Amino acid sequence: MNILIAEDEDVSRKHLIYALEDEGYSTRGVTNGLSALEEIEKRQYQVVITDIKMPDMDGLELFSIIRDKYPEISVIIITGYGTVAAAVAAIKDGAEDYITKPFNIDDMLVKLSKIKEKHSMKREIEALRVSAGLSGKIPFVFKSAAMRQIMDTIDKLKNSDCNVMLSGATGSGKGQVSKLIHHLSSRKDKPFIGINCAVLTEELLASELFGHEKGAFTGAVAAKKGLMELSHCGTLFLDEISEMPVNLQARLLKAIEDGEFYRVGGTKLIKVDVRFIAATNQNIKTLTASGQFREDLYYRLNVMDMAIPSLRERRDDIAPLCSFFLQKYSLKYKKNITAITPDAMKTLMEYDFPGNVRELENIIERAVIIETTEAITRGSLPQGISLFKIETLNPDKILTIEQLTKNYIDNVIEQFGGNKSMAADALGISRTSLWRLLKE
Image 1 (cartoon, one colour):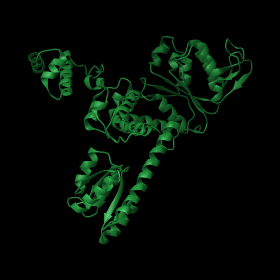
Image 2 (cartoon, one colour):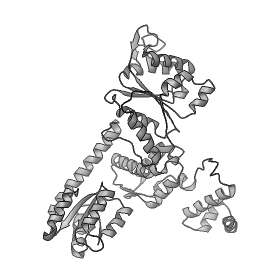
Image 3 (cartoon, one colour):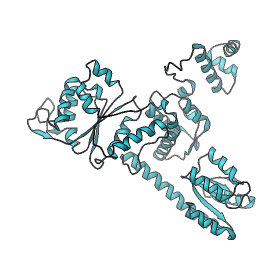
């Protein structure tokens, strides 16, 4: 754990730092509450140990701000005999514990051990929830107004059983949204099954959806239940529905309308109760107009529609997603990486993420694997995202060739720490040419 000590008495502060670092904790010390808040903004801490009486900002005011702004941080109050009542009141308001002066280091270590166990257990539970797709806490991370609107819509759907159509770019989170819809519905205790309609041939997709009887086609050596049958009373997620062949669309439409179907090669009518959530990364209305997607199927699935914005359209989500993925993969790879440096975060915030949330997750996983310090640095990020920025063709934001050139040169110079000679060599031009381009 990273521990911050706010204590204005030099002897007490240094004694604590020495004792805790000797136990393997990463510890820093400051002399007042204001300095503590500045430190918390720069680095991630799991525990703050603060004295009550300090100059500029006392420990109780510091605790109050941490409780409201950084609720994930555990606070231990250091108190003298005369302020025990105030410390007890802080415990009632959410402080983790308190310890009286002169304090016993062994007592402090016991309290920290309990906090460490509590934090570790919380992280493991959250990781299990995410991997199992459970919804004790909604496994979805967001901060932006755009995603808040999506979440509000999902919340309104929790008492409904209607079919849903999701649209959005690949990797934007349509699959995760579909799980949320299911796990917040009355079907949450029933199966949730998904299939990507773009990866199978028409014959195989029909077999996967509806199942088949023994001997229905070459290789069908045994009868098999389809996903619609397995999803009975639950939810079936049809990803990339726009890629489904038109002939199969007609069969799916009839199954949705009637709530019954035949297995491939079968003669027994199978009745099911299934909720459908479909997703596409294409303009489904355009496909409907051109005859590539059945209009009647579209309206059957599109009782409620949601457009999931790309990550570059909701940049407020980048930082919380980074924290989420950092926690997830630090646990997976048993790494003690607890933060992302401001330089690395700036690089991520300026990148356009053509692969959306999926690309961001891959970037953070890669960084966790190769990082050797306690914080993700820009050096752990793929070089491509530092050197290049993808400019979207927004009519209001199209840059001229000169602007693109200057932006690129500025990025290269930054990569070489401001050394223009090295930047010019890397660009294959003279320093004079570089100077002229910058001047233009």
